[in-house]
Amino acid sequence: HWNSMRELKSMVAPYFHVVHTTTLEPRGHRGILRIANSAKVNRMLDKTLGSARTKHLKEALGLGQTLFLVAQKR
Image 1 (cartoon, rainbow, N blue to C red):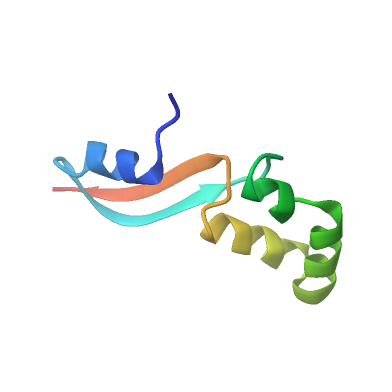
Image 2: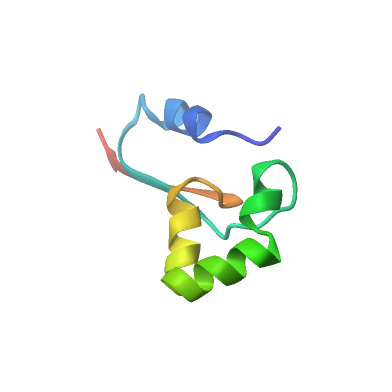
């Protein structure tokens, strides 16, 4: 079972105040990731935004394969 961002937040909420969440390394080929990571879409986005901004945008939209959470102890 892979946890969703909502599940991760609820697991840490009793002990920590969540400051920031994001995802890392947008990869995959199923569902919406099939479109978001297609070569044609990435070429267009890279030309428009640049590859670093494209990657950051995907991570901010929650399309990364790794969940990342910054929290402060309560």
